[in-house]
Image (cartoon, rainbow, N blue to C red; front, side, top):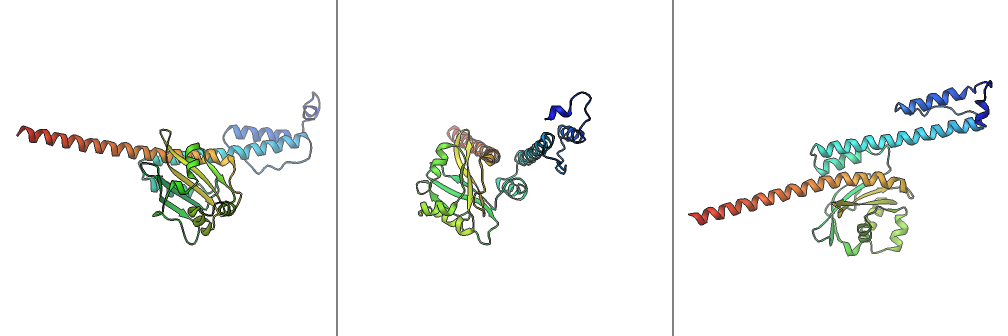
Length: 250
């Protein structure tokens, strides 16, 4: 047992100083993953646990760093297409996807319109000019739940839902699993962000939090755009009212 190695007067296991240095390095924000764990006792299991902790912290650190860069680009006033391009190009080291799609609902939430998409597929079947009635999709359940949805076998899903035209298109592109995040502005769904992979069984619940944060940043851009449009509309109404008053005065 570990406490036997630390007993008074007993020689210190030479692995323990290495593991202590590893723990101190992680406290300083460095996560070395090249440490060799030797043996098959409690001390070795401690070293293995520290290595796994280091990998998990490194992954989390990378996620937060990439999210911070997305936030910076949102605050810099970039267009939503530019932010989506950045996400597609920069998140590959930490999350799996071969395709990202972005769609918005119309004002009455009856129709969903594809606004942007990028894919590794040789030919894209579902492009930005695609629109479909919500009643003809299963997206209503995603919208109602406000929660991400994972489909890890798109071919099986398509067999069970042969009328899902959009699923048929991305399956033709070569996609085999997907994660769909609703876009929420002030708690109300306004669209969807789709991540798709060419491999089945790609997505896990651990991916949902990160993808939800990404969707939240995109929703910030949408909210800013709507507020800006509202201000423009208000300014136009005020100008029309001013001109009407001036005509009455003459």
